[in-house]
Amino acid sequence: LVLRTEVDSSESFVDLLAGVREADLQAFAHADVPFERLVEVLDPARSQARSPLFQVMLAFQNMEQSALQLGDLRVAGVDATAVAA
Image (cartoon, rainbow, N blue to C red; front, side):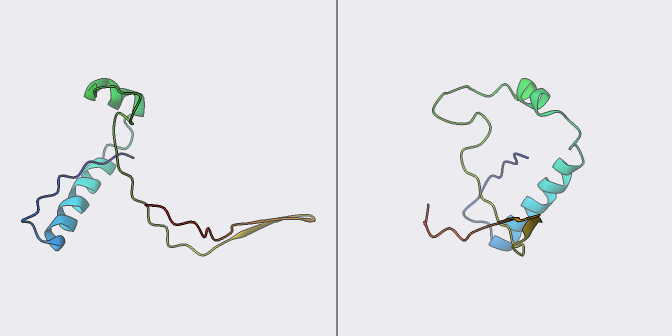
């Protein structure tokens, strides 16, 4: 789900989070709209150098690591040591 947020440097962090929360809730209310339709309606400028809908992605996943056991095969995640920015 691509959500755009305008950041105003004079706004407090708490107000920014409140605005993001409200925008997210409104977006989730329209989650049934197909992605292709969204791109068609927004008609963003196309470039091979970047995604047409977003340029920065932030992800936070605070989940316990899980493992999958299939007979003698065990699949589990590993901690990545590479740091990326």
